[in-house]
Image (cartoon, rainbow, N blue to C red):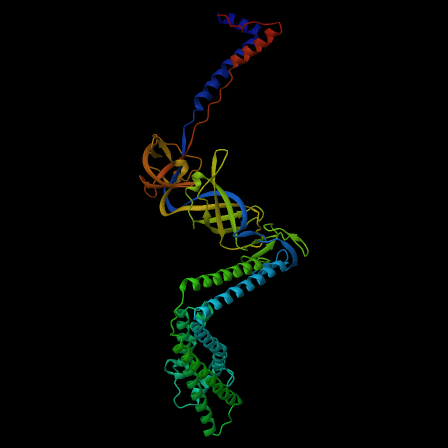
Length: 555
């Protein structure tokens, strides 16, 4: 039997060889499949403490904190343009002047109407026997006016005599007087000249403000003004007296010690004498006026009130005319930089037409956020800003304002947020693109884990942890490690999170090892058997017209 097999094999050497190869290959393929099985690996990380910052991002453009189109309120021809593009201006700066001849005529007419109304009121008062009362009011007001013609000059001169530095160049004159006088007191609260001047100065400033604000001839206003002015002049007279005493004592001390007297001293004494004469005259006039302004008028109040109302109406009309006249001088409403100036001398302008843009130097970023992100943003939250046009530039800022009502576009709601820059950079221009990251929350010294470690089951969260002890060298493997036992699930309570990390409020402690990534086994590669190769070859031969099924060696 064996000899017969060998004889057949000798006649069909090629077929036998291929059969042996097929058998060998099949056995090798089985070995590869059986030995190539892989197991799941896990990458670990330790729970750490740190600071967690939550932020939302948005993009938009740079603009000025305050920007306004400059528009004249009236129409007219341009007489002069006082600024140019790029010029910095202060609030109130004249930008351009329009021809205002017609407006000036309106003001003149309003002044004439007011004067006629006052004349009519005066005639009515005279008819109703109030001329005497009006004369008393006029006399009282004139007394106050005459006093305020003298008081500014007196206070200025008195200040120079006491606090100028003509005598020494380094010290107040008052210090020089006192240094040569035996009653010198370096503490000004005990110095009569110093204290009386401060009292007079305070009363004068208050009295001057009242004098400027008074209007009309009501007895209450005039009586109050007269009394205040009278007290002010008395206080100034006292200050002049004390100043004259200290200057004369200084002069006498110098002469006693045969020292030269500075020429300024004679001038000071002469001025003090002149001031004293004027102030005494003012005190006398005010005193008489106070006594006279006690008269009560017996008049027809309705007729008189009508005339007084007419005067008030004419005063208002004049004020309105002056305001309209002021509109022909176009001025800057706030500090800023002029841009887009498009007007020149001789141009005819219409009211409401923009002639320039005024922008503040303070810049802001205006970004849009969706309704989910906008709900997390509050005024004064910090932000980091980056600019496409200025590589590497980062500026901090804070939220200064945000929309209270969103804008709906194709069913999507967005909110505009304004972020004020903490610092200004000349490279940043209005209209540039800006990316903003607004910090919405910060947690310090909390337990942190990577987001990839957090898993969910319904409304609960958990992480996977090794079920066996882990050595230090195993945790350091970035390619993952294998466990004998499957990992276990640990329920956790999560808190704040950002794009990378999540806060763990409960369920873990610092140093715990958790699984942050699972590496699944690769699929085993199927080895092609020799038998398949033969079948493929037979199929090819069959398609070419030869061969059939693979031959089998007979028993």
